[in-house]
Amino acid sequence: MRDRLLAAEKVKAIDWRDGALHLLDQRALPSRETWVACTSAAEVAQAIRSMTVRGAPAIGISAAYGLVLAARERIAEGGDWQAAWEEDYALLADSRPIAANLFWALKRMRDRLDRVKKHADPLAVLEAEAIAIHESDREANLVMAQLGLERIRKHQGNAQAILTHGNAGALATGGVGTALGVIRAAFLEGLVEHVYVNETRPWLQGSRLTAWELAGEGIPATVNADSAGAHILKTKGVTWVVVGADCIAANGDVVGPIGTYQLAVCAMHHGVRFMVVAPSSTLDLMMATGDDVSLEERDAAELLEVNGQRLEVAAFNPVFDVTPADLIDVIVTEKGIVERPDTAKLAKLMCRKRLH
Image (cartoon, rainbow, N blue to C red; front, side, top):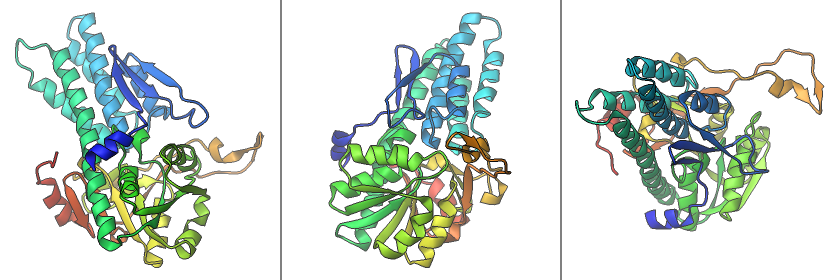
């Protein structure tokens, strides 16, 4: 399966070359493919804030490269470059506070810098570490795709309908994707008849990004309004809801794009299994439950500007919601699978060595 997934790989959103970080601008998709080059930590932080790059794993990878760019700039300036580098670290950390992978990647880079030997080149060491973070995410995607595929096949061995929400594909990661990686693998094995894609308002990650990825690989897909999710689960024979995650708390609560929670409620009501796919770097064991997270809100204008007119009314526009662990059938990570997640099961999972 690994080789087949790599052979089918068509989308790449992050490219480190010629000393710069090149990001596929996800604001422009699907109408045009535009690349943005970042040559400083400040530019990377802005790319994260503006959603030029999005998806928790992709944000973590980008931030790691951002620290490489920061080190290059600060070392060239001379003086106490590490103190200045810490300012860049803080800038990147503040760019997307909800993404657990962001803090995981930044901490890994700082820890690696702390271990640099006296006569080693810190810039070369940091660059190697950022590349390793990127490559490890790609490998994690492949492992999760295989594990998720096997779980789908265990319950039903023929082609079936799947529903997804948000975008947890190649655009959001360093590889084939988390949720979409599983869907891609299942499709290659003949286990996917059709994929229903929630549009995922208001930023439309589903209709703009996920549908674009699936169409590019010939996977049958239909975009639907978010509000049609329950109706589809009731009438279209969907067997699995498969989604990614921006953060997973120690007890298994999942922070994801707004609308994930209500989808999980509907899935449980209709007896449809609910799968969350995310690398172990998305788990934050320091966060006891999803109630501990401060959920971000976006500009009200995204809801109030319609056909060139501004509606004069208050708006509530949260970016994320929290899906309680008891609504989740399975969490798939590169370390293994957790059924009916809870604190003890996830703590045990995180003690395992990586599978790749």
